[in-house]
Length: 374
Image 1 (cartoon, rainbow, N blue to C red):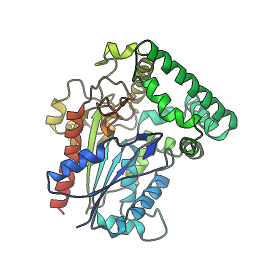
Image 2: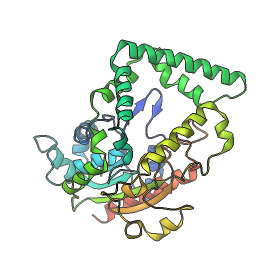
Image 3: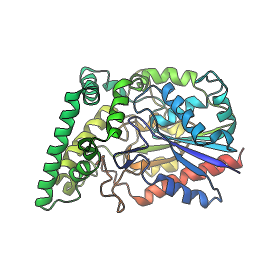
Image 4: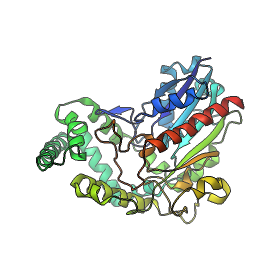
């Protein structure tokens, strides 16, 4: 039997960029977990359009499945992180017409499960922020960086300044910091003239359709029209981070880069904590099993989130786990021995390898159960 699993990245997502992997180490951990269930599968890490509309992202996902040989596979499974979960839901909804042919139907006929990870099924207030004056200004800045000669020159100059700051950090004994990582990977690509970063920024600048679609008001309509296929098993893995500054280690804030990232996380958390008064999330007592809720060492309510997506907005189908992690921890972006720098969001979740393996073990178990029940 030929089995394929597609890992679908989320908002601002990519497969690989400037030496970074979006799903950092996920494929290896998932493959080992599946082996415990005597399951072998090809695992594909998908490319996507970072900020495009969900429909355009779903169309790109079709390209990935076709290129990966999914139309000849016996079974397909989709695992979508963040907006990637919405891409998979749209693609597998009965009667959907992403393209004027039968490609979607051929994919749906082979699909056994759709597992969403930290996905904003009921929207995120963070998306609403990008419709404000400040949010639009930030997007205009990204557009300028990608599309103008002055913007590119400014980014290159910034890269050189950050590289200088990183070298100063090294002199005073702070090596392997966020500044080191940033200057040696992504920003180095900018100064070397590589097209990868510019292409990514240009895609963001040219299509920002998902900004509006991820608002709670828009997701209300999405959920009314995007329904489940009865032959597919839908489930969700939820993430939750402690309210800042809980759990933040004072030592990690001594670095200028870490302090800036911690401040950014606190800002994002506060924005995401604002539930829309007319578009409420599911009640945790009805949707999340008690063992998961009782294992959380802090309150779980409508303000709880992972820095990007409200935890209760992530509920769809069967809840398979509730993990103390921020939005990027769960896809492998956390402090690890095998990464020079991994923790982009100093959230205080203190996510580690044990939790990483456990979370993706739950995903593997769900894939196994979807096959046994089909």
